[in-house]
Image (cartoon, rainbow, N blue to C red):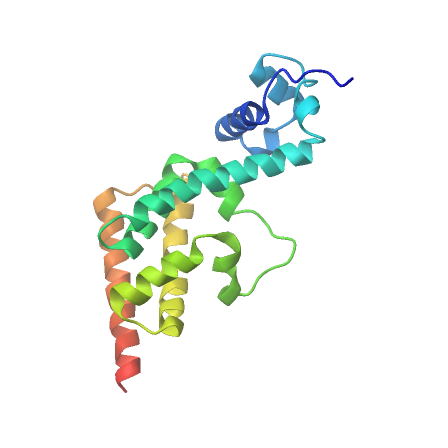
Length: 192
């Protein structure tokens, strides 16, 4: 008869997520997780098969935290700008989670036109907010999204790594300036 689990899968995942938030993904070890739980590492392995499985559970939990930010952004009056601002807020408030989700190497390097659907499960909803919000063809909306993601990712990376800090007003102004310039350029392309 297998030993009775002292902690649930959710409790272990939450403790592992907190450990990653505090010390980084690279420090997520069985020993450190056991200490975080106030026990040895053994209870972890009554619920999980391996540390790789724990890591996958933490990545899924981190995606859930990020998705909450996306949902807040999509609920704003200007949804696309709201999502961009929330992406940056996620990098500021959850820098270690941001790094593991958006600054980690991938086994194969995706092309620019396929990276966003790969890294963000809310891609289609965000893209739809552009198409409907700005009455834009899907192809044009995809180009606009890619350009603005590159810019927003740059700001977020600067924040997540502690290279720069920005006020909310600075972020809003910078995003608006770039958005308006790109939108003007793309609208002129469709007129010609």
